[in-house]
Image (tube, rainbow, N blue to C red; front, side, top):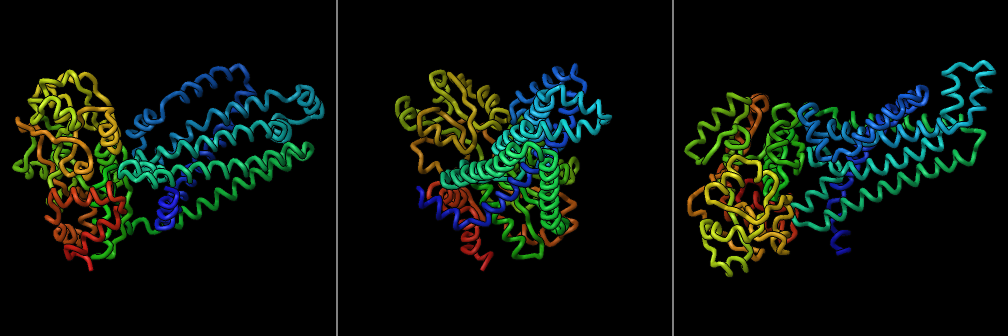
Amino acid sequence: MLNEVLNLFQEKSSFFINLLYQHLQISFIAVMIACIIGLVIGIIISEFNKSSKYVLAIINFVYTIPSISLLGFLIPFSGIGDNTAIIALTIYALLPMVRNTFTGIENIDDAIIEAAKGMGSTRFQIIYKIKLPLAMPVIMAGIRNMITMTIALAGIASFIGAGGLGIAIYRGITTNNTSMTIIGSLLIAILAIVIDLILGIIEKRILSRKYNLKKDFKIFVSAIVCISLIIGALTFYKNKDDNQVIHLATKPMTEQYIIGSMIKEMIEEKTDIKVEVTQGVGGGTSNIHPGMVSGEFDMYPEYTSTGWNMVLKHDGFYNEEMYDDLVKEYSEQFNFTWTGILGFNDSYGLAVRKEIADKYNLKTYSDLAKVSDELVFGGEYDFFERPDGYNALSEKYNFKFKKTMDLDIGLKYKAINEGKVDVMDIFTTDGQLSASDVVVLKDDKEFFSTAMGAMVVRDEILNKYPQLEDVFNEMEGILNDSEMAKLNYMVETEGKDAEAVAHDYLVKIGLLK
């Protein structure tokens, strides 16, 4: 395992270093904002002491809100991506900053403050020259806790399409790549430890020079300003040609990583356009579509029935005879175009553990319905929310499962292989189907819709880069169900890299040299 981790890091070092930079950037911006706001709030409530219990109570309450819930609440207001992640991380970082600033100032000996007043110091001078320098050791302890917590929590930013090392963790889980998950986790831990050690040295210096606290405070502020300028300069340099780049998003699924890599490579090979990929956006369509509407993303791979049911909010069965209506409604409502039908149908299905299928002689969904009250059903979050998902399926077949379990899309097969669930929804192109001890049942009442893979692109992008149509036309029909399943298998079971699998396939079919 250690060799696998080291080899993967060596092979994809630029990938991990880029994610590390993104992680540091998101965390640092959030920490800087929290430091400024938290310091101001801490000073204010220490000056107006009666307000402290109310302010601290409010911040404590916000701190108890689960991070996923807070991200979901913020998305309608700030969209998806780095901005929302930074806002959420800033909110969580406020508590230790406010609390330690307030505590540090409150613990200063009153006699020192009275002596300063007696010597004619103004309120501002007392705060800046006496209270803050004397409170710095306590404030520094709060900053250390805040930064460690923020770096760890920033891993969840990938769920809403932001950058950072959470992408490696989530992608590793989704593609069954333990080494990638380990590297992402270790880098977060190492980053937190290194920064905590640096801050520990600064804190120790402050504590050991009691008569130079004012000077150390100025040095600390100057260091923060310098680091902020460096991060800002690097960000500006990285994004200076952003108007020359199109943004592609993918869902947290192996085949989406593969398709995303194909699209990126084809566009960059056939045109002068650069493609920036946001991989594995948590929530899939639920978060990517709002990003398309706001212009944060320009295109993404989608499935026809998902567009019909999840985005257009139509109930009931979808088939490809409705495709023209799907295209028309997307154009009218969103100014989006469906293009590049890739040729495979990744529709839903149901699979049961083989021992369960053998025990009850299960062949069809109707067979399953007769014993459903004895079984546990597991599905990803989207499946329980879709109008053509769990509730409608249960009504159609009269399923009454003993228990249901929400599972991340990357953990379903692990759960059923370990016996945690008996039945689960699957995709017909899942690579792990052939490697898992499960039986796929027959949808005897033809409940599930077809789900052809294609690209959804903002019209503005197609008008700006008309050469994209030629690329998408070349990719029409390049995959079928079995080929897509084979590619997924190569990534999920054989441990191959999604980008390499995508490239090799494009070469194999003659689209790339």
